[in-house]
Length: 495
Image 1: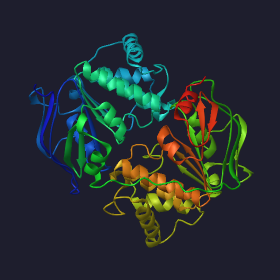
Image 2: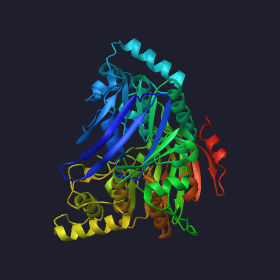
Image 3: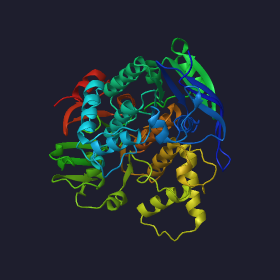
Image 4: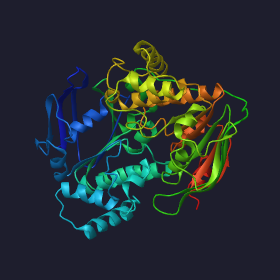
């Protein structure tokens, strides 16, 4: 059988000399699901950008149905090739209907609003991708935006569909539905290329598993011959160890949320009477499906959203009326789910993105010697295991996983009393996720109280002292180890 899409001897060498892809050969056939794994910075996203027309290779060629592949995303869309990006790229000022309609027009469709709405509703019902066509993108959580991106991929990627970390912000039940969707799309005759860091997910979804390492295609395994150990060995040359929680005795209360009522951008309430406490030395996990109030809970606690009712206390002090920076100076550290633009500032160097927020949080003068600031940054980079060529390189030139390591390391370097983290290991490879888990566990062991809001239930179960479940803006359960994952899953869907 002839491949739908084929890459021959692909090289991508950036102007700074980084070899992102080195001699990659790959063939994608219809009716097949391919899973691509590799450590952060292995070249996976660059490869997919080239295959989907978003970037041009330095050497080599890509062919679609035996002919030169489309050279731009618009041409790729019109040819039935679509990439669902790791980080949603929707237009914040549009509605879901308008954003999807714009993509369909780029793909050559000529539909009015009624036609676009019909396609969205049919795809939502037929493929289990529930989205609200009239919701404004700026009011959606990252997980909801990701769902919209997947829906666009279903509508446009008629031949080849690339999914770059599509399950990053999904619950276990949603991941199961996504795996079933990928396999269904393959049965319909498409080639599905599924990039993930979750080994179990790859084993569940794929007919063939591809593993990249340092820009090269290290291994290609059929589903029957693949195993977790074999995959890890190909990814890292060894099998990394997972951090083990250290038993701690929780101390006094460091964070309290009392009867929080926060309005939803879609109308009604995002949080309805939510109360919780976090004590020193413990990790409180918050589980839930994206869009059930997690984003608003984090924003209320860190000072970006003002509750209509209720209050928030840090170390016994009511901070409900204080700005985010004032809360940070009281010992609050924040690891947001959105990296670029919120956690770090594109265009600035690694050392500036690391040192300046720490100095500002501590109330120090910013007119300091570059050497001291670079010393702070160097310490964070080393402790967090960030792979960087130089502290002077722009922060956005790091891989997504290394940016996340940098953010987590920077926030914990300040020795906070309270850590609020939302999906801190999202999109990280096995080693990177282990590093983040280890840093959070060490922060708790040093006496910090950690509020960990995450859609990865397995991660929560590994590190949390307690888990509470948020569903439709209400806490529907509290659980302690050993965790009953099925019971937590049921609580996540309660009304």
